[in-house]
Amino acid sequence: MSLFGSVTTAEIRGWQCAAGLLLHELLDRAHRDHLPPVVWTMPALGGLIARCATADEWDAWVAALQLTDVRPRLVHNGRVRLRASGTVATSRGRKVTVVLLADLDEHPDADHLQDTPRDAA
Image 1 (cartoon, rainbow, N blue to C red):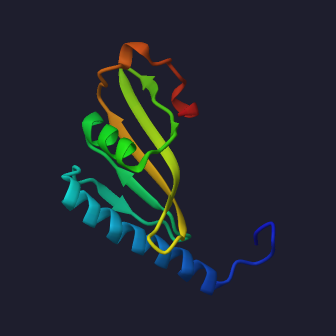
Image 2: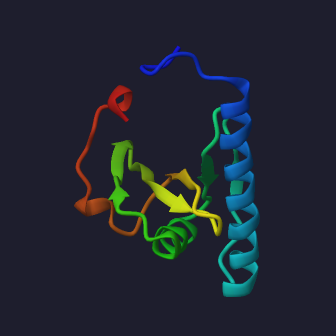
């Protein structure tokens, strides 16, 4: 149940179709623009999540998608969690939420990041 009533299966399928279309377009763009490969997943209610293995992958995709909600955090013991998110439109004008994640042993800017408790990250 959402704030506006029940979510229908047709709405969920529509969100998933928009996310699938965007993923197809992003993979085409990655090939064309030589972006690094990342692991993409689509949650049941649509949207896309990319898991990056390196800071360079994360930086490349944040720049390519022009994501503005960027939150690097030093979790503990030098481990860094990077998160960026935003809304990206498909070629058909459908908006899809995209989240980029990276859990890294270290990050080039780790000295500048603020420590956060493990459970807050």
